Image 1 (cartoon, one colour):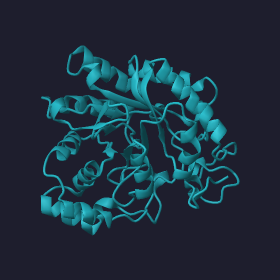
Image 2: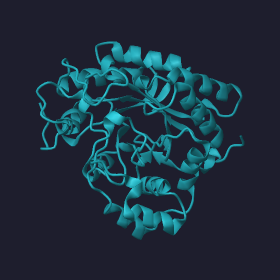
Image 3: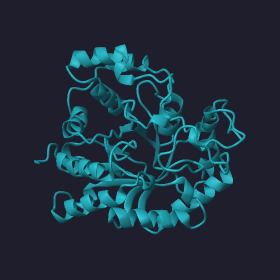
Length: 337
C-alpha cells in the first residue's frame, strides 16, 4: 500500500524540551474484541498509511506482535526509527521496587526497540485486575492512591530516562488533586498525561491545568469508544457520535461524525489516539486532521456537547472501603482514601 500521508505533512505538538510528537496517533488497545494479530496488522497498515505515533501498553497483550511489525517496517526502510513515536506503559502489577525497569525491559524486548519515546504510569495505583474480567470484579488487595507509593514508581520512571530507555515519561488517569500532590516532588516532570477526552467528556479543568504546566494532553476514547469492553458500559453512557451538535457539524462537512470528534480534538490541542483495524477508517482518521478544519463557530458549539460523561470509570480498581467508582476520580477536590 502506498503511503497515504507523507511524514512531513503530519503536524506536530511541541513538548516541554522542544521535542515533537504527532498531533494524532493510533491506539493499540483491542478493546477485548480483536486479536493481537489483528491489532498488529492495523499497525502495519497504519505505518504504510503515514501514522508515526503508536500508543502501546504491556497489558494490551499484543506488544510482541506489534514489535515484529515495527522491526519489519524499519528493515524494509518504510520508516526510520527516529520518525516513529512509540509509547508504552507500566501496568498496575509492576509498580514495586525494580519492577518498573523490568516492565520497560519486557516492553522493549517485545517491541524490538532499544528505547521508547514515552513511558507512562498506566494507572496511579498498583490495583490489579485479571484480563477480560467483568465490571463487578474486585481485588480485595486494592488500595487507595498513595503519594509515597506513586512517587516510588515515578522515581523508577525517572531512572528509565537517565538510562536512555525512554525519552520522556508520563502519567495517565490522574486528577488535579493527585497532580497537585506529586508534581512538586518530581525530578523529571511528565511530558504528557493520557486521559479520557471526547466531546461528551472534555475535562476542561484538568485539560487546562496540564496545558498551563507544559504537559501535553493525550486523549483516549476520542470518539466515545463504542467498541470499548462491555465491563465499561453502563446505562447512563452517552454516544458522542449521536449527539445532535456533532451530527449537524458532520453534515455540514459531509463527513462521518467520528471525524468531527477527531478534528475537534486536534484543533483543541489534545492528541487523539483512535483505534481501528479497518483500513478505510484508520486512513480517514489520519487524513481528516489535515484538511477542512472546523470553524471557530463550530469549535465553540462543540463546547456545549460536554456532559461530563466518563466512560472508563475504572470500577474494577476500587479498594474495599471505597463507596463508588467516582472515588477513583476525587470528585470533592481532595484525594479519596
